[in-house]
Amino acid sequence: MDFHLKSLFYACLGNDWGALIDPHLVYDEICHATLPSLRRPSPLISKDWQKAYFDNKDKICYFVVFGRRSVSEKKLRRRTPVRYKQVKTIIDEISIMIGSNFDISDRFLEKANFDDKDILLVDRKILAFQVKTKNSKSWFPTVRGVLHWMPEIKWAAVDHGAIPFLLNGADCMGAGIHLVDNSIKSGDLMWIKDKEHGKPIAIGIAIVDGEQMIEMKNGKAVKTIHWIGDELWELET
Image (tube, rainbow, N blue to C red; front, side):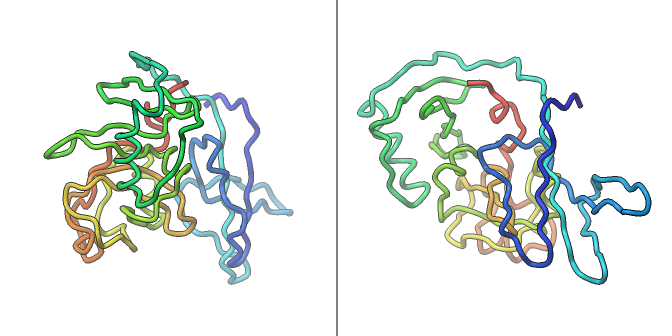
């Protein structure tokens, strides 16, 4: 990969998780990294996503790599500025989905289409999209929208072992889910977050009810439809 930005290093020693990844920065991959040895060279990045132990203490370093990705050949289509009243019903639907009200009446709003999905842009950021579910089409925040509004409902939290698979577009397995919003029903749109930091990783459609997810030992629990690093995330706006 042709790195054009310096790597940003976050170190959390012991149980101090105060240094979190900046949600406004685009990160290509998150890896556990071992601390460099003072006596001999050692690889800085370990991509096996395993914890590194030092002096019998659980010390984990998060290494966030920034790089240049190939831009999607797909473009936004039919991009049009809109007034707040024109998208008021969309805003109301998103408010129900995330469980809280928000006011964007003073923001620059646009509607567009990408990959046959309607898109809502707020101040030129893609914060919501319309998804075709089993019975209808529904509006839901994108990953950036979740970062912006941080909903308190419709989520499932996964362990570190699930993260690299989700960032590659894989569906979410039930065994990787440790916490979940029990109000989720099969067919609902939902978001998946990192159990440690609470940051969103992907958007998906529930295959089973939330109460079943937490009990699953194998099988898929969520169909992944959008994730950090996919074409929608990488789209230049």
